[in-house]
Length: 412
Image (tube, rainbow, N blue to C red):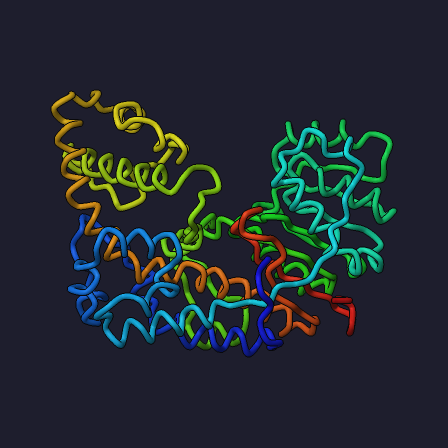
């Protein structure tokens, strides 16, 4: 379980996050490419220290986070030490105590264990809000598990909005005979609106969808429970702030910078071991080098365009074949693959070390976006809370926003 932090308002937490993050936006926005020290690292005098880290210290920093390790790293620049401590402090959020509501086993028999735990905890967390809602609106409902369970548990009408028609059909079949129904609806393309007595829920609402839900809840003055993920999934080149405080501070985050929020320092991987994750990242860098060697102008991160990220856990040969085919290019030769693998191996150690300060800001950036959303609802008159609801072993994307248009409505 995660420890709770001292009670603090959303506005004050956002202020602290902005104080640390906004002056460091140059770090957030500039990824380390080809092992060369970025300007932000050189200007702050951190390059020499980072490149001198031993393999053991590097591994510990990647597993536990730079902030957790900085005091034990001899010779760390004072500015980096202070920065790491400030970033960790500003990223801390309270844990919301929740009594999970466990549905009957048959209701979730086909659902993976981690997803089941998320559903159980979220049901417990939203219980006070559901008790007052006339209707529950599940945005991005997927196969409708939460919609269906919430309708039955709280004896409420529930509607699941999902853009994929196949998922709508599956969800409707599973919910036959209950109070849940499902509609094919793309909330990022169509106007999203709620009734004042709705409870809008988004469990891992990606990117732009989360912002749209917040804006719609603010307009209608309805209650909201939102757990977001994949913040980089936006249509615009950058995310504009929603709250007055974040607008004044200039918290504009480019799409590429938002992708940083998917990083989580941890000793045990969620989908693969840390060694496997590092190997996949090195493989991706080798692919980037290969594409650039073919004369393509490929930005860091674009090497995987059109390719599921999990393919990087296979061999470079298969990954390169897919990437080159998508671009209408001939397959790579064995000599080409060997050359690019060797080049990536040489550069990757430097990249890992120089990336540590930027990775340090991953959680803070995610927290800042959540607090910006919560503060925007506060600006609209809602009672708001931003808190951790899931253990990181269940999902590292575990920050929830709860908002109620009625005083005392959160019931926490």
